[in-house]
Figure 1 (tube, rainbow, N blue to C red):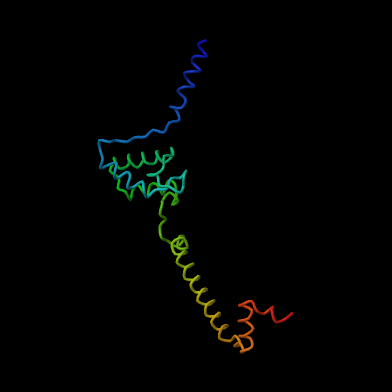
Figure 2 (spheres, rainbow, N blue to C red; figure 1 turned 120 degrees about the vertical axis):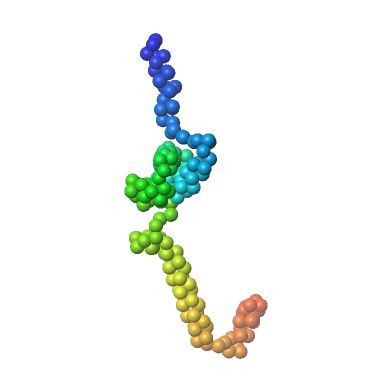
Length: 158
């Protein structure tokens, strides 16, 4: 009987073991604002398309708590970002740094736009040349086209 009761109590307490500790101190709004501002620069490693400021994943909450603790210790925002990059890699930054390995990421869309405009310009130029070289329609061709458009072509040829 006691083992069943103990098992039931442990079963009821299990969700508390997995709950992510959220340390939010309402008594220091300046610190919380700094935490949230810095958290917008860090990517949630679970969600990947959200910042840790927007995410409720356990890892994001843990990272926010780390940021909060490091700010309390007096570390600068850049020191905290450097620590996070050293620990998790550059992927943790929500906006990647501009360097030779990320040039395509930063300048690729502009390059695609320039190439697309170049292709469009070349196609339009080629089409204009083709239209200029196209043979002109004779008066008979114009009359036949007009009769086809008006639907009278089939009437005279039976």
